Length: 278
Image (cartoon, rainbow, N blue to C red):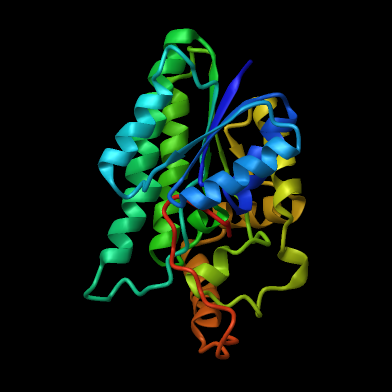
């Protein structure tokens, strides 16, 4: 039985990947920071027919925790056949702020952890001559909306570099670049979304299905939905000064003061182990 490891597998796109891979017959290893949410997700998947769900509680901003997950990826006794590097969170902060702790955490979770886990999976899969590594990036990496765009630009570039290194190993390496997806991602990051047109929103399950089809046919970059494929094409070909102007418009619409939240709708802090996406 093949096994898939999904970081940030308790909500959003990560949970959608876990469900989709379970339906394809994979045993699962779910990684997230919140152990209670991990257990709840594992129970849900087992009720839906998953044969085995292993959980690992880990904060991927902590190097020791990342190393524990890396060791699981390199285990020869119970090998991982499919890695989904999905954990992360939104960054709603200026690049000019003196306190850069949110940016440090973002780089740890969405760059360093991806690098370490991708390398661990790559070594193990190369030795077995099979496996798949899928990194969750974003079309935001093609524009210039602060550090989140920078982080996701790195993820996309890293994925292509890893694909080059593993090109003769029979290991598949890919990145999925979603657009706006209906999850809790924006609310958790405190990002306004009222200005985003309804037709631009994607469903997480549909996005994952399209991504897995792209990966199966060997695509290194998967941009789900025709509308985001078109938008991604233009971000690659428009002058960068135009992209910066568009990015400024997007950023200003997100940064307008939001209406006060209802008292019973407390905002959750960004979670390194869970990713509800874009």
